[in-house]
Amino acid sequence: MNQRAKASVAIPTMTFLGVDRPAAIKDTLLLGMTDRSYLPKAEDPRSDWVASVAAPSFRLLARQGIRVENFCTIGTGTGLDALAAIEIFRPGKVGITDIHADVIEQAQHNILENTLPDYPLHLLAGTGDLLSPMTRSDVSFDLIYENLPNIPADEELRLEEGQNSSTFIASREEALPAFVSQYLISLHYLAIEQAYPMLNHGGRVLSSIGARIPLDIILKLSRSLGYDSSLLLYTWKVQSEPEDVIGGYAAWEKQGLGPFRFYPVKALHNAFGPRAYVDGTDDARDIDHYLSYYELSAVEAYEALRAGQSIGHTVAMLESVKP
Image 1 (cartoon, helix red, strand yellow):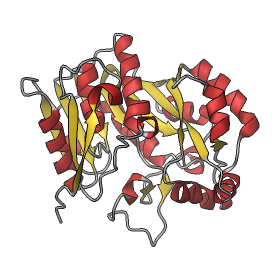
Image 2 (cartoon, helix red, strand yellow):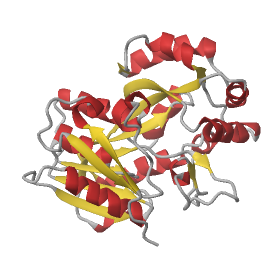
Image 3 (tube, rainbow, N blue to C red):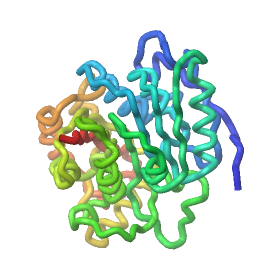
């Protein structure tokens, strides 16, 4: 059943995306949402994935002179990630996918309505699993972005209801390497795997990953699939939906998966100081070493959360470049 937009949120482009006066998208983005849309955190950009992770990563690549003529995002939600890419990279073609038809319909509307009328945009929108909707086109991409969920849903959870699919995933039938299953990173692995034949030479995948797992495991994700692998950006977030997310990781940790890593928010503040993020693998490792003294397992983090402590985690932007 098609669910029309139930609400809208206004996003101030310059402050939220960290850009100068917009030239490709509107000064204020008005984004409609369905019941399944993940709500952008307009009042708290530091806690928003696009504002604090995707947009800074796009800006870093742009400053490095990386040209992106064809861009794709997997699991776009409201389309805010695509709008950020449009403003920062100015691609001619943009692909968006999501597993829910109503989400894609609304995201397509959001992108077209918030892109300036004279911007020459060719938008490809498709519903389906990961990159499968894009296989029906003949477009290859310079950059594919993904920020996918990790926690396997239990039998009682209905992924089609509300925003459940933003946090939880259905079981997969594909054969996966043991380390991928151990650390609950199956969708990241599959997205990076599917992306390889769809990338231009020198193209890249950016994977926004909650770094609740060792950095070497994150880097191994794309190295095991033939990419050159590095960390573009390393930052942190207060854990959103903490009961569901930390509780979900704790449940799987008790079954022998992981272990997973969380930190007191105070430790994260101290580790990063005034910096919103650090860039590069070496600086990320330095931060990781400092935080190792404050690390909590998922079970310990859940106990601390129930005791009233504020819990967060680091975030890695994995850059996987096709040789």
